[in-house]
Length: 306
Image (cartoon, rainbow, N blue to C red; front, side, top):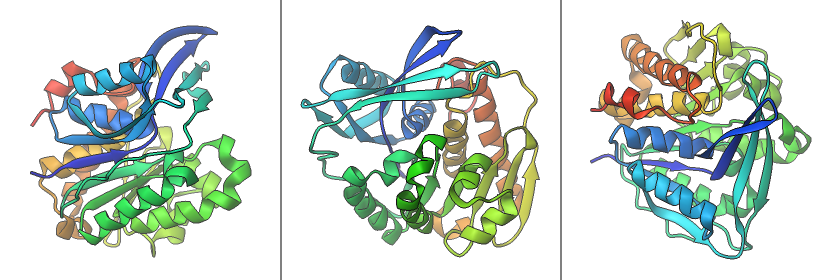
């Protein structure tokens, strides 16, 4: 059976509204995607790291309860599991403060064997972190060699702009490994100074042939070597936008499994299949914006379980 691997950082998200903490959740971009996929009963493995402390135990138990394998998680004792304080503004968009105490040795695990048509989702700041990058990229290169489907989400935040000259070459390399790149208009504006999907695709099309560009209320834009598409999003009053992009990514992965889309088919998909993929991804992202959760709820998942 095809396997799904998500690779990323782990944090405990503590959510603040009106200067008061309201909820704490296991978080991290690719972890959020993994939990959604686990709730859909899909064979998903999370690759990452967190401490042998109470926060780490909380996260580990949560992943297992949600059917996410932690076989490839590095648990460390000489550091602390990371915290992310998320402060919601009047539009319920989040700004973050991070607290991280990592050990000297990072991601000290043996990576899994990867097979053709498995799916790998990676991205965010973790994918351009020097301390873990060598091992991570070895795995990504093996996945590409073995014809797994690779999805990359740069998820680049404003607070890293000062370091962009150092980080940008790694982002471009990550894009070159990916079969699908999914990013927001803010991501590509920060990274490349691109103002729209066409400018972005002109920059990356020789590196990756399938681009999903999300532009908040303006909708979702698709660019492939065969055609372009634009898709509307729902008009909603979000409770929180945390996890929206992560669950959009989970919707892509879910659709690839549901429609049995293999590596060899991916660059030849017709518009009807892409329509289904994007529709599902939008539904997942919209649902998460309507709850104080980083992932789809169990009730929502029941409607989609394969």
